[in-house]
Length: 511
Image (cartoon, rainbow, N blue to C red; front, side):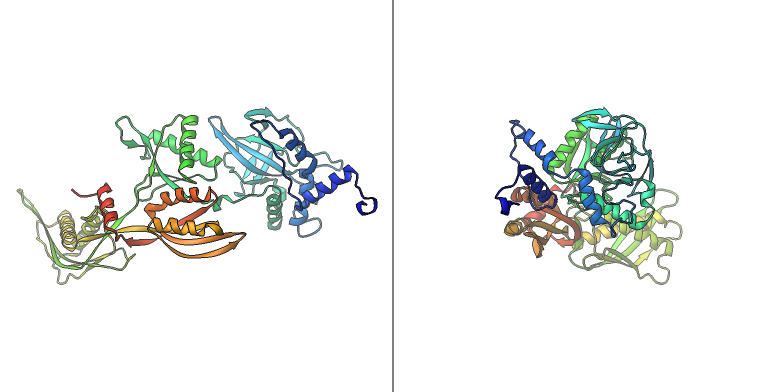
């Protein structure tokens, strides 16, 4: 028509523009400023005029998702045949939880009249059947406007339902009839992903910052780590509630020390969480860097080290003697205990007591900085016992004394945990990442292009450097770069200044 008449009427121009946007051929841009209240009305009008409404978008989604013309999930393109909704946000406050849903589809009759909210739904993630109460809301800012009982629910509606406590953000809720077959589930998920796409699934979020969380006390000491502490229980409940709202928050416990750990995106994110906990729950919290789990190992083998425990104070005494050799093992070997006792010099129960003392003393830490000793073999070669005075305690003590003497003679060196770190950044920032790794005593293992001007860089870095790396990455990439890290191995610390700093800062150092 344009080529023939040289012009198109405005309504056809708008129709062509809307079709191109729907087919993702044109990406519209509207200049606006919310602070100056300029262009906001025009932006809203453009959304209504040009963007596809939920029913239109759903037709495209189901056509793409279903294997056949009508699909196997019972949802024909353009015909609403079952309720389905994505949980796009979760709010948890003192009144309980509020799940905010974006409706993907709903049943309707032949006249196109949609049904109301179903009272029985299924969470596709957990398979749990849920009861939906009579109370629902629409949201206008922070105001909750009651949703009329029996009101029709259209695709695209955003509604808020309280007390779905087991539901998480990004869950898909639907009716039981719609998930009767595995193929139906797959297609519902595919259609939902097209209509309410996730930029990144929760399991893929890179939580680049870890903090130790504790409660301050009046005397300045940190508390809140005991499971029976009521303040700690309230803190854990508050953090778990926030983690339901924010998928980039994870709360767990340090398996070594039993401390409460918070995993999030950055130090600023951690401080924001602390502010939320204070404002909502009235709980002041303190955050500190997660302690690095350093270890020690011996530098050389030592032979014929005696541990002697002898005590006599009237009546039955205590007597136990053991002789050990100690030698270094390869990295990652842990602690090995070998008995070469022959001829009953030490009875089997007391050999077990010696091993108990050996392992306990190694765990108590080495002479350098007081960190646990690992990668050693302890060989029990000889000993003495008394028919009356020898007992379990005596040989446990003898085992500890022999280890202390062996470590003192052999000397120990410091081991630090290393992380296998995978950075995801723009190709133009490869040099910046290499510089960050080098400055933090790490080394690059390799890189691989992941397409769309993106590259993945693998590096090995000390665990102690991860907070600094997180801050540097955020600064250099303006928040666009991410990384994930996993424990790789332990590695000897070679820099003397670093060793001295770690020794000076160690809370376990033996005086």
